[in-house]
Length: 61
Image (cartoon, rainbow, N blue to C red; front, top):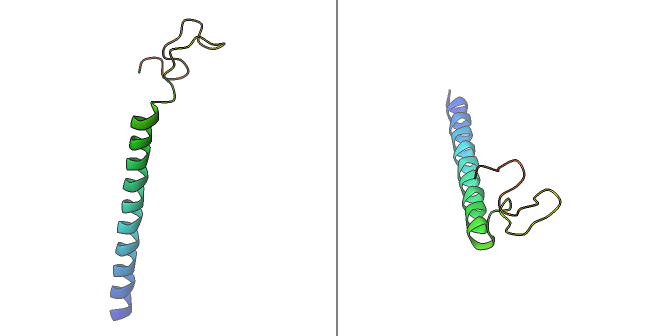
């Protein structure tokens, strides 16, 4: 019984650690997008984007 309780506690701790890691990665992604700009935005015209502006899969953003 005690072993089962310890195993459950370890699993809960592992899930909390995974959630914290995911939140940290999301925060890093947001900070990088603020620092360098979103990758789908470009003011320059190119092969896929003759007029400039947003291009790719996320035209509406």
